[in-house]
Image (cartoon, rainbow, N blue to C red; front, side):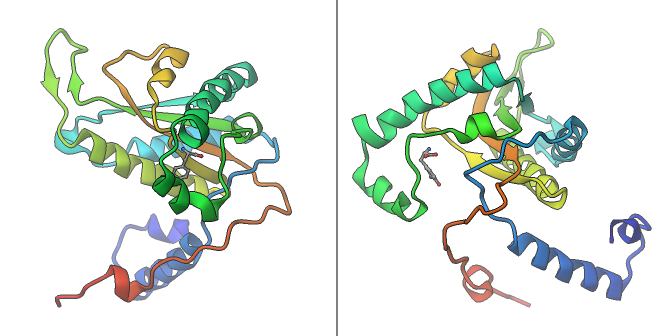
Length: 217
Ligand code: IYR
């Protein structure tokens, strides 16, 4: 399929065929919260990051930074810090409504997936760039980085890698753990790895096409 796309000419039937295949493939993507410990080749992660970094961005400022972590000691350190934040979220300062909304996912403060996943890809963005002695603004930095994150997830999925978009409520600790300048804000931890063979995803529904699309043709 990818070889055909590379031809770069619009062909009605080919495009239709590919778009149908993509619907089938993307409907199969499910968030994975348990990992087998299997290592993913570094090049697959690097390629997914290259796909993400090709995303469009406001004024082409490319406001993102992708930190990939596979070192077990650093992953464990990030797990310990993440679980502190999650303990506040679930136990010490709970927001009952939020917890109710999450209950069907059976999540809790245990973040063992951080150890078991092959890689963490920690995504940062910055609104202001002060790197060349000048101050320049990054337009739509968060939106642009959101687009890049979607492309990263798509690339991982099409490469056969399972993933999780992990968003602890407060992510400042990631700057400290990775020694990343404070002008960068952490947006998300993309957890990437391989699910255990018997892994069962929670039963969830996606909205129907007519609920998410209004047509004005
Ligand atoms: N960060 C917590 C809670 C959580 C929040 C949302 I929004 C989710 O979609 C899932 C979980 C956790 O990861 O457990």
